[in-house]
Length: 222
Image (cartoon, rainbow, N blue to C red; front, top):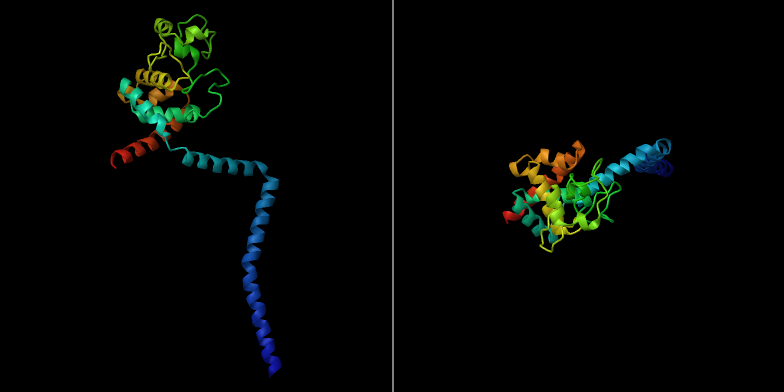
C-alpha cells in the first residue's frame, strides 16, 4: 500500500512541475521568436525603437521652460497672437533653444530659425533661393536696413540690434511673422504653413500648441 501511495504522490509532483513549467516555456518561446524576428528583420526593430523614442519625445517635451513664458507673452501681446503658438514653434524649431548650434545646415539662424533673407528682407541684394543670401552681419542685425528691405527682424529689447540669437528679438520677430501670415486673425494653420511650408510641420506645431493651450487653461483655472 505504501508503494502505491508514493507512486500517486510522484504523479502529482510531475503534474505540478508541468503546470509550473508551461509559463516558462511560453516566455522562452516568445523571447526566441522576438530575437529571431530581430535578426531576420533588423529594420523592424529600428522602426519599433524609433516609434518608442518618438512617443517618449512627445511625452517628455510638453513642459514649457518657465524662463521663456513671459517672453512669449510679451511678444504675443505685441502682435495679437496666442503665446502658446510661439511656444509651440519654439519647441519644434530648436527644442526650446537646446539645439546646438542654433544654426541649421541650410542657414536658418537663432532661436526661431529665421532664414537671413526673411529676417532682413527679400528685397536685400542677392537674396534668392532658400534665403541664405550673402548679408554682412552689420546689415543682418541693423533695424534700419531691415525696415528698408521689409524684413521681419525686430529689436525687441531696444539695444539697437535685431538679433535672431537674442531670445526677445527672436520671439518678437516670429510673432510679427506669424501675425502677418494670419495668426492675428485666427488663421493658425495658414500662419504655421507660411512659417515652414510642410504639412507635417503644421501638424507637429499644432500638436504642441494644443498641449500648451491645455496647460495654459489648467494654470489659469488654479
